[in-house]
Image (cartoon, rainbow, N blue to C red):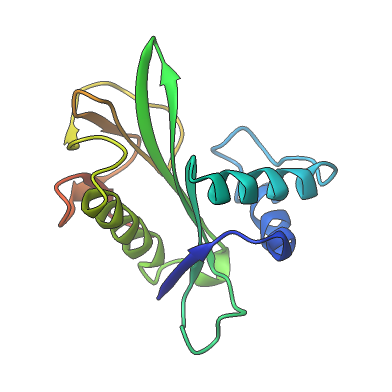
Length: 161
């Protein structure tokens, strides 16, 4: 498996992930196709500016044109607190192979090595809606919306992918 930065050519993958009713069922429903090209360009800009890590999941390094999904790490303010959050999406044909889990762990490991996106992650009791996210605040609090386990990075990480 390989992670690479999002590219403008990833529009088709974005359309398949974000405009699909099944993929987006727990995330507020499918997004409209109109504006998706702009979304990809905004994400490319954020990746270039290093304000978010937006990585595409390549399941087989020998076939770099095949993209299975994405894993993203970004910061935002919530309840007056700056938090970092990681989320992932894996296209249906690639699900059940652990790609989401491995990609998330790899991204969190890179963040740990870079000493970026928060100092540590620990589970908290705070409920969170929506699947596929693990959040870490500056105090080290984290929460996940679905089943989690301890990752090698010390952060909560998804158990399925």
